[in-house]
Image (tube, rainbow, N blue to C red):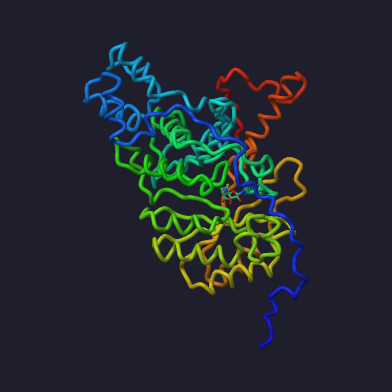
Length: 423
Ligand code: SAH
């Protein structure tokens, strides 16, 4: 049988280039243990050890998980002495540095500094508001994009975070605190549309979540445990996005959690994916799609295939066809394609696809019966793409020290700054 016209021409074996992926963090950090990291038995012990009556446990949980309050010194239902004692169980893990808003305040990007100085980002997006920012007919939803690592070791060349390497894994407490902080902003009505709650969480901020598996799962448990022992957000409302750590995808499938898996594919062929996602040299496209399909089989959750459209790199019509082949040869209905117009990182030679090319890519997938969405590019004017705000502030702080940079106004004292970028 002749080879398919879509198959790449036979080639010499690729050069044995070293995978540039950085597996080990530059350092690890032992942060003081936070209430959010304690299990039920540990909380009971901590309360007893602090000399507090047992009923305080539920009270503390309610403050933290129901009212999203992270600072016990404000908890006036405790005596001043008890507040001081409880505060030792709530070491400050993340400190807001700056916030930027876009889309008339409905997209909020927050930058936090962790106890050792590293920076991480979250993006909170509110959907379903009318033009006048009142709640629309189908209700209001809010999605938070959280970070799982400081930096990232996966070295994808189009991603801002990937350029700086992996600083360290976040602790479970640092991940949970990102959620608590955003849920608090929403509950206090700090976003347009009135007080609200977090509907969805996506692990699409900085880092590779499956490379920080233990902390990730601990955070997921805290997020999904019903209130007041956890935030009570259903696992169905969580999405974990991975560049393709195949064995960990298999492990995640066994956790019994109906989390949505998103796979950052970005290319249907190994030649190109080796370049766009260097981890592909370890686990190739076939292995990755097999793992993604198995995840669907085990959990029943449709997998999201992420594909950043990059002009003249991965947006050719033949690659749309090849992508459809690769997905359909594993069956129908198990995958959904999410196309992301590339958000160019500063200094990048790559840019987003031309509109006509993007439409053609969508059309070719749809003609093959694949469900396709194009991600809205919310917040791209506030460095919405992965890692861009952190990169800018790092550079800005340097510039501010030299007192001559465009970002010299960035507040180094840890105060929150609001920049309104209306689109
Ligand atoms: N490490 C995880 C999470 C990364 S961020 C992963 O690889 O899935 C979430 C998504 O944003 C990924 O699909 C990632 O490839 C994509 N992304 C990163 N930089 C981007 C950019 N400049 N433009 C568009 N998408 C980008």
